[in-house]
Image (cartoon, rainbow, N blue to C red):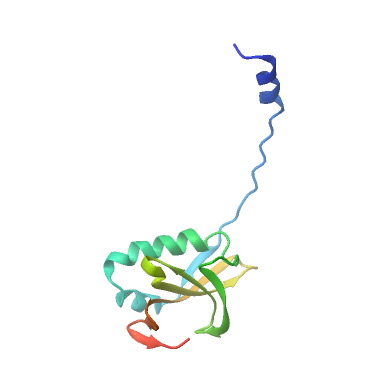
Length: 122
């Protein structure tokens, strides 16, 4: 048996849920080659990070997601993740179409960033 207060709370409780529209993630064809240069054991981690972190708020700056100071490879944003933040994903966003274009995936060790097995300066 519930008290009158419990009943009142149940009757007056209103739940508002905003509809959140996901961003579509589109990979540049060259990204396949970038992934081949990264150890296979990290591939699922990379996919999960991209899908989880870029599907809903790709333009929200965080400690590990930042706009690039200079556009590189057509990308305007970078996200870092993985062991010691070693992986980098470079992307740009079309807000109107709600699309994230993943343009490059690389691995950084020390001061060296490698994309597709080649050292890149950014």
